[in-house]
Image (cartoon, rainbow, N blue to C red; front, side):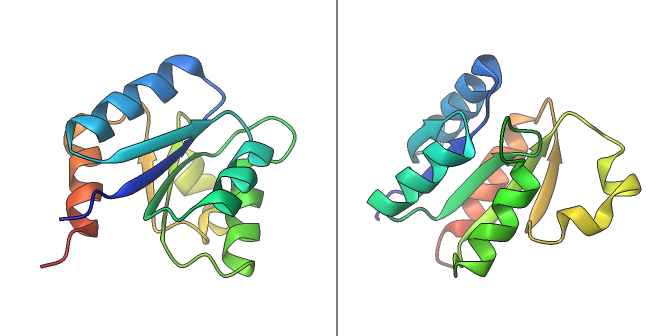
Length: 121
């Protein structure tokens, strides 16, 4: 079975490390970066099955990046990672380009479920 490829985009070092550990523990190949520019560069270099994307990034917001990725044809899963538990209630329209919204701290079982979702039946 080919390993699932995950791109983690989060400007918080601890959050990025925890997401990496969770993904790698479930057999994924992981690349990470801290901002939209790094994400665009990583996507230009290779294919990813899943992007775990912080909603609040410096410079280009994660929600704007998700929109840009969709408009650019990215068809993989894009999952929002946010510490703002109210965001889905207060700004649902800004989350429309995400396949899922996960609230930090994200339980390891939710990361595992996202990776299982990518596996062929």
